[in-house]
Amino acid sequence: MNIFDLKKFENFENDEEIITILEKNKNIKIERIISEGQTTDWQSCDKNEFVILVQGNAEITYFENSEIVKLSSGDTLLIKKNKKHKVSYTSKNPHCVWICIFYN
Image 1 (tube, rainbow, N blue to C red):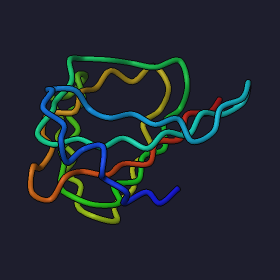
Image 2: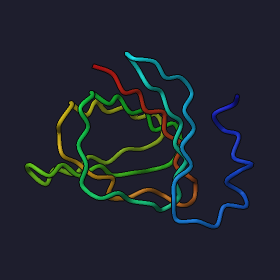
Image 3: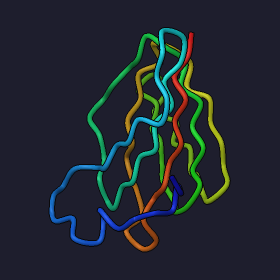
Image 4: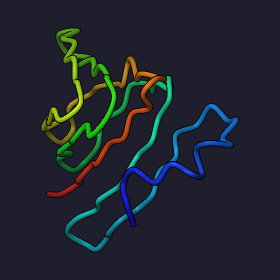
């Protein structure tokens, strides 16, 4: 699989991201997420999440202090487990291509 293979996204007319699980076992989950303008509600996870924004621009907002972290292509971010946050912006052109690694 090529992480830049966006063929499914070309005819995509929904407001949801495309999530592909690349690997999953009891210790780790690795996802590729493609987004185009989508945002999320407040969320927290019981696992650490290491995020790589491979392509695009995005913003993560933390609930606790309203801190906004701006991400550009190539940026990484570690979101600690149980840290309440949301994706508050994703670029449409180019699409955002994320690699997200969830672990204990």
